Amino acid sequence: MALSNTASGYGSVSRTLHWLTALFIFTALALGLYLEDQPTGTDAEVARVAALYSLHKTVGLAAFLTALIRILWGISQIRPGHLYPNRRIETFLGDLVHWLLYGALVIMPLSGWITHAATTGFAPILWPFGQSLPFVPKSPDLAETFGRFHGIASKILIGALILHVAGALKHAIIDRDATLARMITGRGPLPAAPDHVKAPGIAAFTIWLVVVLAGLLITPPPRNAAPVPTTTTAAPASAAANWTVETGTLGFVVKQMTAEVKGQFTGWTAAIAFDEATRTGTVDVTIPIAGMTVGSVTPQAAGPEFFDMAKFPTATFTGTIAETNGQLTATGPLTIHGTAAPISLPFTLTITGDTAQMSGQVTIDRRTFGIGANYKDETTVAFPVQIDVTLTAKRK
Image (tube, rainbow, N blue to C red):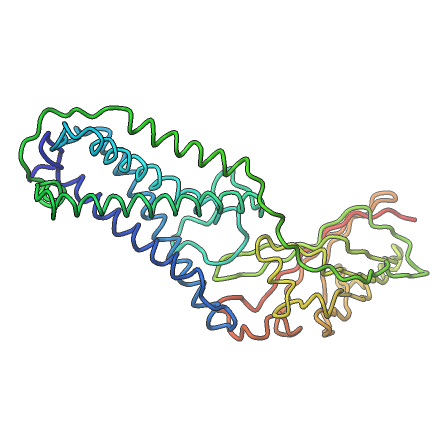
């Protein structure tokens, strides 16, 4: 059994890569189409959909890597000649479909991979090499752009596959020739010398170029943002506050489907009173939930199942600062989702002149605050949530 192609048929390597690619592509397409209208109303349904999306992404990535190997192998091989070189239109269309398929086998899974890498959370790829890609930032806009490419490429791939299969059936049923046999057994009648021309490849490249440019230039309708509460919360008032926050970050990390998801809050305010001599003080923090971002899952996080922003538009923390054995800690009730629970936030503090720099971290359990109450285990969303805060403040 020959490994390499000949003028009359495909070698065993080409045939194996062809059928392996077909298996991966048809599986990924079937999963993608099946998942388009699956319910996600319960924890079990969300977990099931997330698991199937993970499988869809993993199979799609396998298709991409297999297609790359197939293309690289094909470059080094002779392409068997056409059985009917005199059928110019049929030959042109057949080659055009092949080139469209090659483009789809690269663009569709690659765009899906970039969409995944640019998205925060949900349905990780089932492999040990991480979820990110070099030079691909976490960006909802980038994810949306490549998500459009992915959708358009899927339509072209489906159309090209239909034409490809229809052509194969025509050769097998109507023409009764050896076209299909050459891809199954590698054997077939010796055609004329290979006479492949560049026109079909140029036409396919032009089609894909138009698709890519359309995806880049067509502006999609604006995404529906999570509803912002009409009421506003003023910065907490404190007569004893003697520090003004100039800059700061308030972030959190939670695991979703075993993958870390990072989010942050903006627009929060803090009134801080601190006595350097006694190393004691107070802090009052107000956090608007409308300032939360968690990548593509922000609307879901702000919705009724999690923070329920419409009903509970703010979170607060009121703490007392004290030092024990050289460790500063802010202790007091944290109120989220209408539920208050005591926490202790250890932090480091450096004061230089009139500038203070603070950094702290604490881990809470989302169940304590009724966050994601329907997610009763850690299959989809983990229980621990790590909160990280840093800030720079100026003395008043």
